[in-house]
Length: 243
Image 1: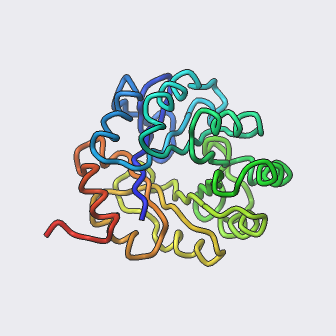
Image 2: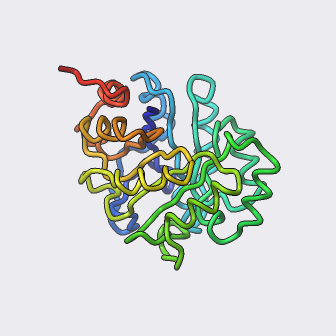
Image 3: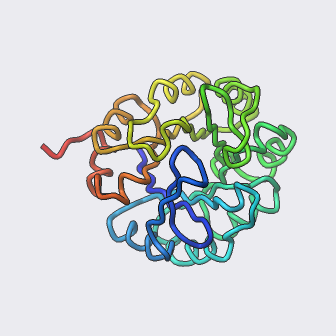
C-alpha cells in the first residue's frame, strides 16, 4: 500500500486544517520545500501536495508548488490537488513533474471536463478526490455540500475511466480520530482503487487501512505532531508491525 505524506500549502506555508475549516488552522512550517526534502530523506516514495488557496478560490501557491516539484520530483512521485478545474491547470501540474493531478470539484460539477481530461492524458495521471460530509460530496475547498452522494460520484467517475479515487471523510480530517475505512472500502466496490485520507492518528490506523485492501493512505497531522514518523508509517503501510 502506498504511503503519502501530505503537504497542504496556504499563503506559502505548510498548514493543517481541522475538518477543513479555514479558521481552524495550525502552521507547521514556513518552507514547504524543506518539508518535502525531509520526507524524501525519511524514505517517502510519494508526497500529496494541496494548494489550499486555489481550492478556496482565494489565490494560488503555484510559485511554491513549482519549487517543491523542482526540488524533489526527480526522487519520488508527487500528486497535486486543490482547485484543478481546467485542463490548463491539469497540464501545468503534469508538466511540472507531478505524477498525478487530482480533480475534485470539477469532477462533480462538470463531467465534460473530466471526460476531456481523460481523453488528453493517461488515466494513471489523474485521480478524483471524493470529499464527503455525512456521505454527501463537498465542493470548492469543502465550503459547499452538494446533493450528490459519495458513492454515486465514485460510480460515475469510474465508469468514465478514472482508476484512482481519493476518499476523505471531512469530519475526521485533521482530528486524529481514525479514517473512515468502511466508507473507503464501500467505494472500492465501484472498481476504482481507493486512497483514504482524513483522521490517521498512528501506525495502527495505517495498518488497518492496509489490511482493508485500500491502495494508499494520506497522512498529515500525525506526522507533524510527532505521533508517527515516515519510516514507521511506511512499515505499517506494508501491513507489518515493528514488534
